[in-house]
Image 1 (cartoon, rainbow, N blue to C red):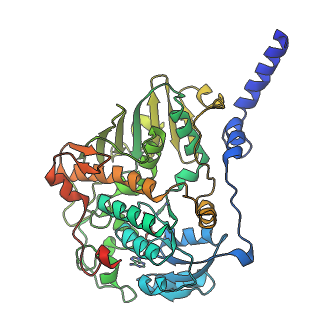
Image 2 (image 1 turned 90 degrees about the horizontal axis):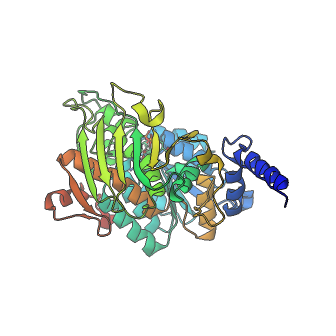
Image 3 (image 1 turned 45 degrees about the horizontal axis):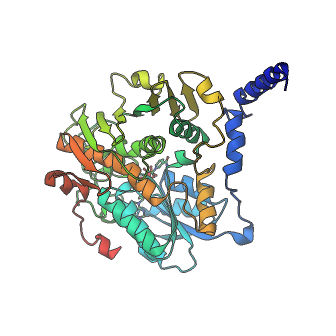
Length: 442
Ligand SMILES: NC(=O)c1ccc[n+]([C@@H]2O[C@H](COP(=O)([O-])OP(=O)(O)OC[C@H]3O[C@@H](n4cnc5c(N)ncnc54)[C@H](O)[C@@H]3O)[C@@H](O)[C@H]2O)c1
């Protein structure tokens, strides 16, 4: 090749690699290369649609079931709030209504369930479903405690069921691109990761109210301590109470800390130190989960990680996300990559436009999180956000919550999944369960 030709082909190469694939906002080279790795997601033919059920008919459960309806028939819906179950039944062509998931799980014709219940119910229902022979699409955050995740993994292995965690950023090409670049040292050795999460509400006090006639409040509370009904503890805002969730630390952390571990290459491991603190005092009688917080992590490979919320003073979150209120920033010695929903930015445009080499580390490709679940139901392969990944991602969040609540630095053994020589902290790995909702009955 003459030097002129070489210049030409180098120019053509740069033009191609710098091109953006139509409609995706992603570099063309990445879309092209990923195609070779992607599994095909097949919408099922009408005769080939498995029968599935939705448990937990709130906004997210119904959204998930709408996505699943491309691949499956929704034949049953279940909620402890009768109005919500009825509304879901209407939405899904008269699917049979249940108020007790245990009855629903007795049905032999059901292949899988979608679990859209609040966080304190995920594990019990997921275990019961897998033991009943069903595959599970479970909403994130996968668990309420680290102990729950370990139990879930054991049951998945024993029953050989497919469990997809609903952290759908795993099936978003932008996040995959960012993490592949990080793993291939595109910005040099990785030094620091920042996950910025939206602040939670700091509200209250709230008053008890009569239980709405359509709601079984005792059932809704499940394993958690019984308290009189308070509207703000229930639908939607349950996530702002330690009793049922972990605030935005687990709600958004299950998404962005999942991405942090993916980029770090530690998705089946975790940090070695954790130091969290609340940045505001919560209002007595109001939401209990820290609304604003900051947690510093270190990993065995020397990378540091800050997970922090935006604050009332700085709702845009400051320098991390160029004005974003949530996202993940990876900083290496030669530059940075910031990724959030719908946007990827870099310190230098070439970090994105230069293709990865043929021998680069490539990830599992899924461009449709729900479709990937149904592919795996057929192939019996592990989904893109399998139970262990779901458990480890939320473990990072739980560890942050424990440090915030205990109020000191903690040392963690990610292999043994125990705090090192710290009996007080180890007590936080599980929670007391209110009968009859103990795991031996799941
Ligand atoms: N993947 C995402 O981006 C995403 C987005 C929003 C919510 N979520 C997750 O989805 C879950 C649900 O969130 P939501 O906003 O829809 O909450 P929600 O409170 O509106 O809905 C939960 C529903 O579950 C029902 N429920 C409670 N206990 C039950 C039980 N034992 N059996 C049957 N039904 C029961 C409730 O009555 C309620 O209707 C949460 O874990 C949340 O973190 C995920």
